[in-house]
Image (cartoon, rainbow, N blue to C red; front, side, top):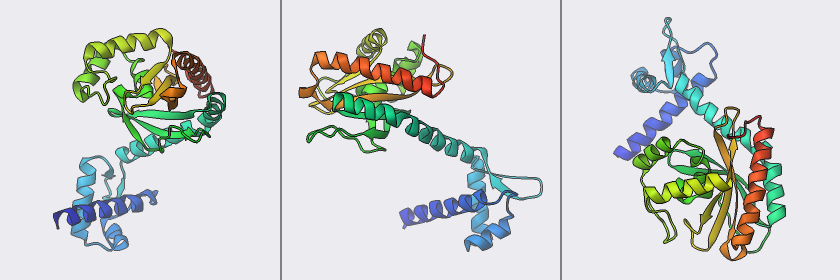
Length: 256
């Protein structure tokens, strides 16, 4: 029953946010209660909870409005969507050049989220459905993004999220992570060498924003049997070149 009550509260809170999003001038509590079909006391309780988290706010006239945290969530979605259309031609080109799956991902907390891909046409291929998540330290895209950070920021990341190898090839210590970061910086691309899924390799490079910071990353992923060391190096050059061109297309600034 407690779980049902929690879900119901979430649904009601989201209903109120949706109602407020349609009100340019805000809305009175009584109007929200009537439109949502809820008791005024219930609406007041939900709104005050949302207000504490800055998802809604109230003005001097007592009208409720969408708060700044709601805008922050919406902007995060818009930012994610803003990468997809410009990236797709580059992903398709990488896919066609390498015959492997090309991916676009962003950093979200301690994971990389795949937001779109151009899937290989090979019968046996690597795939990751949009929305799929991979821990940063065993992801080519994650390591490519991390390599753009200052060393002390990487150390704080490790302190917060820890190091968990998923396969015998995975990174298992802070020293190993920093050695890997140095190698990525030197060659300009990152490699997931069967570190998350045995038998799969991934080569990735970072895409930068106008400040020169990591915005997202591109990768090529495929069967390890089709990606021996010489092909990994070739794919690395290709994905780094595509990432640089996408950086330019997005108005980004190349890293120093």
